[in-house]
Image (cartoon, rainbow, N blue to C red; front, side, top):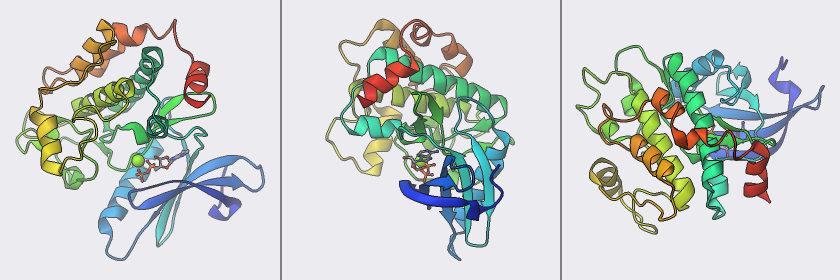
Length: 288
Ligand code: ADP
Ligand code: MG
């Protein structure tokens, strides 16, 4: 195991994000490579500290092949560090950024892994809350795993500081913008993770964020409008019936009618994948 932060040597920066930086590090004694996420705290950044503590609590609970493993957490006065499994191929966002449009075989494999990860998390009463391409990481084998529990929360029946989070909302479900939507009968928000998966799946086939016209730079209000009221679903002409139906089940605006994780786990779209694409296929396709 990793006993001290000083056992780790920084090699490179892997990514930046909300309140922190992720480094590629080497464990000096064993030469093993890890990813170290460092969340820094200013005196007045209590929000970041709260987020970090929540993230640490959740990471301690999760252990699944569909979720990026956290091996150790180091807490100090000005920062909180997570030593995580290194995902060598970066994020799905990086793949999409270089203009790759994925094929349905590969997308269905990604979708199935995310669904299995969500099934695991939801079973532990954890809502991820931030499923999007930059939080889906790929390792050297081509396995996709869910990362970044910065806004995740354990459901306790009540709304919590969650609503304070107003970061990237492009992948958030309509009910999360609805002040009523979190009332009484929707206390959990599991359905929001399914919506986000639907946006990601569609984006993989379309090649760009799918809920607004390509090239448009909407302000926040226009984006929220597209999510909550937009009827336009740019479904690629070549999309299979299974793909179309899967995306429609995820992007059902009314969360009560939306597909559940259990339903989607047995959906024909993701069950074609057992025979089709492999992890190696993902590597060959995305990184050739
Ligand atoms: P944030 O909350 O700041 O978004 P993330 O955990 O999503 O933090 O990390 C930000 C970026 O750092 C990711 O999009 C990815 O590019 C990179 N990254 C994070 N974790 C890892 C990891 N375990 N292995 C490789 N790269 C990672
Ligand atoms: Mg992130």
